[in-house]
View 1 (cartoon, one colour):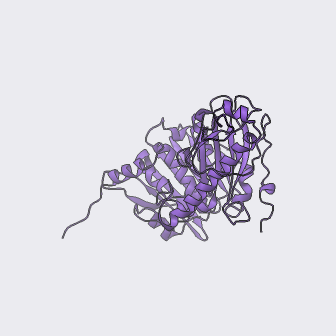
View 2 (cartoon, one colour):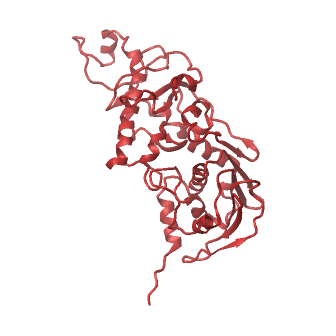
View 3 (cartoon, rainbow, N blue to C red):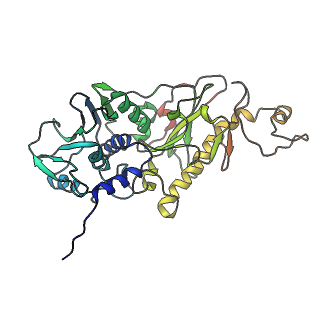
Length: 383
C-alpha cells in the first residue's frame, strides 16, 4: 500500500511567498486577524528579547478541545468563505518557519487546554498536549512564540507597533468606530509592552470622504484623503482600502486614479462589505463573478468620492486660469487633462488623473487643516 507524503517545509514556504510582506509582518497581521475574527476586544503583545519569546494574548471566544486539535492540521480551517479577515490560522502556521516552538493556550467555556508545536523536519511537525501555563486569564487564546533567531523583528516592540498601525489603522482611529461598531461592539484595543496603541499622527491636510452606492441611504464606507507639502513616508503613500479594520491593499493601481505627486498623497477608506469579496488568502479582492461584483461597485464609488474632493475648488477657476493649466482651449471649452496638485493651498484642487471619476461633496477646504472627523455626522440616520 502506498502513502501520500507532504513536504511541509515547502508548503509553508509557498504559503509565506503568497503574501507581499515579510514573514514576520505576515505572522503578526494574521495572528491579529484571527483574534478579530474571534471577536476579541483586546490583543496584548509582550516581547522578551532575552528569552527570545513573544506572547500574544487575546480575549476572544477561544477554542474548544476539538477545535484546537483541528487547528494543527495545515489544510483545515474553521473559516467560512466570504466572512472574516483571517486565513485558517496561517499566522501561527507560518510561525513554525521562524520558531523553535509554538505554544498555544485557549479557554472556551469549561475547556482550558494547551499544546506545543514545532517543525522538526521537512515532513514532520509534531504537536502534543500539555498543561496550560496560564497565558489566558479568563477566556480567549494566547500563543508563545519561541524564536529561532534572537535578532528577529518579532522581538522588537517598534516593529510590532509599525505593523499594527499600518495593517489595522481603522481600529485605532476613533473616526472609524461608528462604521465598525456592528462588527466590534466592544471596540478593539492593542497593547504592546504594556502601552496601549494609538492612531498614527496626521502628516498634513485631511479631507473626509463618504463612499456611497447608488440608491443607498447611508454610506457603505468612510475614509479620508491626506496630503502634505513634503513627501509622505512610504507606508503612508497611496490610498489604502480596509475591510473590518484590516488594510488589504494600498496604492493607486487598485482604484484606477493617480495624483500628480504620488509621494505627497495618501488616504484610507474602510468598507466593511468588502469582506465578502476577499480572496481565500484574504490578501486581495476578487474581481469576477458574484463575489467580485461588490468590489467593482465600491471601487467605482471610491473613484467618484475622490473625484468629488478634487473638483470642488476647480469649478471656481476662470477660463483663463484653466487655460493656463491646459484644462480648456482658447475658446473656453473644456478638454481632457491631467489633474494636478495646486501650486498653492488656495488654488484649484484638481489633484487626480484617472478613469471612473464622478462628483460629490468634500470636507477639505483650501488653505485650512481639516477638523478631526466626527463619526456621528457621517451617519445621521443609522438604525
